[in-house]
Length: 249
Length: 289
Ligand SMILES: Nc1ncnc2c1ncn2[C@@H]1O[C@H](COP(=O)(O)OP(=O)(O)OP(=O)(O)O)[C@@H](O)[C@H]1O
Ligand SMILES: [Mg+2]
Image (cartoon, rainbow over all chains, first blue to last red; front, side, top):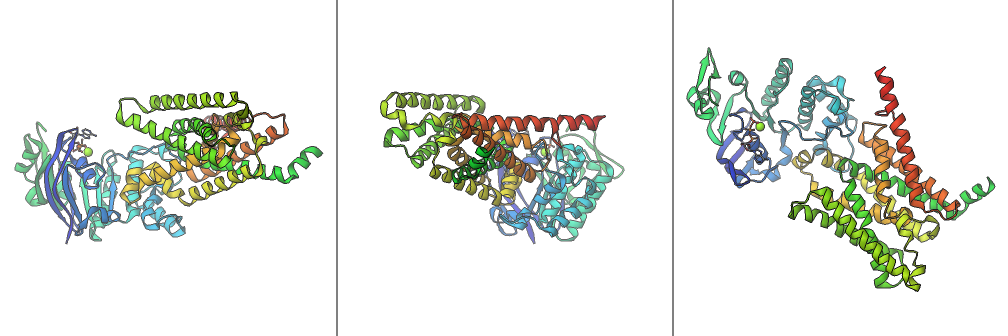
């Protein structure tokens, strides 16, 4: 089953092409790492798929239908949430926002929804912080709250932009466990990831990107020295089993 | 004391009390959204820009008719808001400068028209000057009914769509992602602000109605970290200010109502700044020791 198909996507920022000729199809129930150097267009790719920025061209098909009809199937955790951190809202409240799409218009979250939001906070280890105003959380804790909101949303396809940036090893492990649970439930997850050493452990599929996809497919066949050198434009060498960037990039 | 009691029990006063408290509550509630959306200044410009609309309505129709005045007010208020956005979009002028220009031009035009009207004998009785600072004593029962019903409608609408307003202000991208028409909610919020301003100008005046929108939520922010509570507290602060200001103004010798209401709201703000349970200066100082 195809979860998401991208056809001929292109994006420009002020006439500068940032993404060109992007075509790929992600099968359902996969965990894909999106990999590429800084400025490769990874965040731009996600934002344009989600129609948050204008595309020059390109279609996004989700489970056989246009993106606009399938919005509620998709969850998104941005690289850094662009919200007003001084907004009068606490961690629990933010997580509850993940339920708004399910609750429907006008109606208020009921006890069950609130209970569920607590469970989501607990899963990311943030239950004690439920009543904390969001500006009074550390960067990593804020990231976890927004992860819990995605969890509460209970989407079918998730896009996460560097969820491991600035979180400690324990949190990274917890998040990874969560992503694997999602995959087991048949959800499709795409994660922007920078740490080349963990790619093989974490992802079953890889999308190598630098302005245009270098390669996409199962990790073992795509995550090769040759491909990485083409993506990063520099020398890459393997240390034991994992690749490291030795120059350029 | 007896005088105050008889004043309070007269049916006319009760209408005035109901009107001013509902208007205050509606302003505080909507103002909370406006404040968080960082659109306080646009609200102020819009309020000032209603004055030429009121004057034009009088000049065109030649009668003192509150419904016609309010339609005029809404029209020029909306045109001003549109101008602000158009200037920002089509020129290099930034929002704050654009607001400043539009406010001065529209308010200046309003004062000019008002001077012209009051200079003409017939215009003397128009009571239009009352629109600058508000005059509750000059209002008749039907005027107040317009205020009460309008405010109640605004309160009901914003409570119904509370959660939708909240998410489209807090995280518009996410709101779009779950299929919420964020731009529609932005328009509805703008319309509700116009609503408060228009029903409120007769009582509070075009100069100070924006202060009634913004001061109560600013004060409420010192008491809570939750939007729901902030809206209610701001509403209560607005209602207290509305009632107190109106009572003093109607009991006194024709003092303008708007300044009294805003004075009361400012007093509440200062008290909140000092004693507020969430961010007040004293609470913070005590916590640190
Ligand atoms: N709003 C913008 N306006 C103009 N150019 C932009 C904008 N946002 C990004 N770019 C440019 O587009 C390119 C791709 O940016 P993008 O944020 O997608 O990269 P990325 O792969 O996510 O990088 P990183 O690993 O640093 O997060 C960069 O060259 C960047 O300078
Ligand atoms: Mg990025």
